[in-house]
Image 1 (cartoon, rainbow, N blue to C red):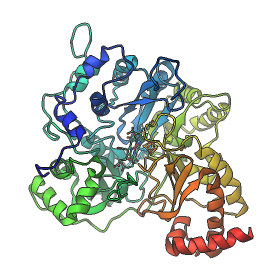
Image 2: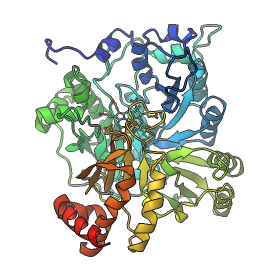
Image 3: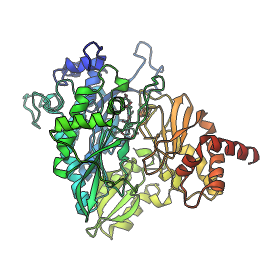
Image 4: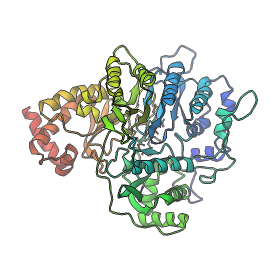
Length: 569
Ligand code: SRM
Ligand code: SF4
């Protein structure tokens, strides 16, 4: 970074923070319902975002702040692996302290919303008591490492889980701040769950220029969307053994429409590495981004911009420098399958898991649907394990043959659909949180996608396309939290009630879509898509998927056909 460049304010906050401490401790003992601005940046490294209920804005009693502040906490769950005790602890927390909902995220983590500031410490302590952590779930560090959640008992999965955990440990921040602030016994001053150091050997005092994301995948199943990560380890398998990984670098989806220099990017294939050297290569990649990433403009600080700016050859050369030796080129292996893991599947040890579709990852109880009650009963009756999927759903694992009808009965008893009863279009859809908690949302997402599905289902059925698998992903702003840019159909909130419609990505996750129509009002999305589905039915090639069709013919031709069809249907 050139010296004459002005550091962005977050860099100054990090530098002055004494390794993530700032004045969070002082804020915790004040009566205010909010943290000081600089501390809200540091809190992210501790897994917490300060938010306000956007539905409640402007509705406050006279004399009170116009915003009702509360905290969102994100629990980091590598590969989404979770015990029943850990899931129950989160259900208890959302009921006792949060807004009585729990959110399964697009990166296999759990989020609690609406935690009052005075309950934050207790919340984080209770998460740690069940041996999970919020540390580095957010912030300018490596975050939750994604890995295929299917609990298959084979050598390949065992190795993928090993690497996922090793990366999580290796790249975790080492500062003692987390332990001091959240886990130390207030009375005695003793650290209960001891940990932490007084330096950051990998990150240094200012951590990374921006968030950093890693995924580990097997080639036959890209359920983690590996190409959208800053760093991906794609297993190279020979004779059912992982002999190494193709290392992918520089994926990332967030864009800022007003900043023309921003763009979504799929990762590039950089090098091959053996399993025992994977962590060292990850460390080298992180250090290159640490030292060369852009620290003056956060909009272009992700590693994808460094690679676009300097080129892959320069980047590989730098990684080799930090790693200390030359890297081998990638093998030809690439992703060639995608499984959302819904429904029943064998684990390979005589037991079963069930992939349960959680619509947009939101767990709640209302009069009709009781997700939380169902999960509590599943825990007490069947004592299973759980895995969170990168599609915001849950795998209930380690079940016997005799458990299968019991699980289905519990799901149905609580008014919930079995995965097999859900339409294909809904099954492959997902939405980010957006309103009312996300401070960056410009429009709705999670709260409106189900009604779009209600509209699309009969239209697709009329056309005989109801068993076509294609992804529909919606976000409330261009940051791309539900990964809309590589979906077959991407709906990206552009302004209140209006979306940019992207077509031509693909379920496999290896292609970005392009803008088909901009500023489509929510009410017009179905009417905009139906003629395209007609065109697909009429002009597709045998076996061609929806995304491949849109990509092949291009938006211009699609538009012509769609206009023609719209005037006749
Ligand atoms: Fe995200 C910021 C929610 C996955 C790109 N994301 C946010 C914040 C924290 C808003 C904020 O900064 O104030 C959102 C909190 C909303 C709320 O009320 O809960 C938020 N992101 C989410 C989650 C919960 C969406 C979901 O419905 O599941 C996902 C949590 C993942 C996790 O467990 O760690 C989530 N976010 C993603 C993904 C998808 C992925 O990583 O696979 C992306 C696109 C990939 C990428 O990183 O490029 C993503 N989120 C962003 C960005 C844009 C980053 C950029 O490079 O420009 C932001 C804004 C930012 O960082 O400034 C953002
Ligand atoms: Fe919020 Fe935008 Fe992410 Fe949706 S995509 S959760 S609106 S930041």
